[in-house]
Image 1: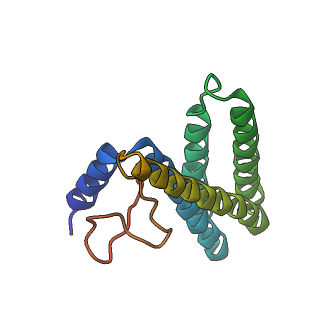
Image 2: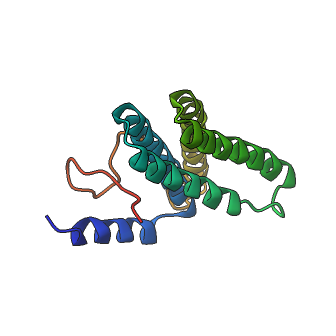
Length: 157
């Protein structure tokens, strides 16, 4: 199978996603790359460990860059602290080849993802009451709507 189909699917998924869905995709990507880095530690594949953690770190940086303090400075300050913690844990995991640091980051990433998904559902319900466009947060194991059976979304560079 060629790379064209998955890349075109990813491109379409990103281009048609709402900002809320894009943020959820970022969490999914950071979690997936962190899990792959965890596997790389077990396999003693240091190059893969570095590559996967670098990608997870880049996602965290992108999320931090997306903060808008002019909207809610206090919330952005708190989120910036969480992102700084996650970034530091991922750097420490890479330098120390530490499964514990990856697990600490994964715990926070999963919690944040679940919180974001709950928020998306709450917004969807509020929009439904006012006849706005729906927002759906798929579960971590649920493929995006319209995806072929057995497929998963992959945020690859």
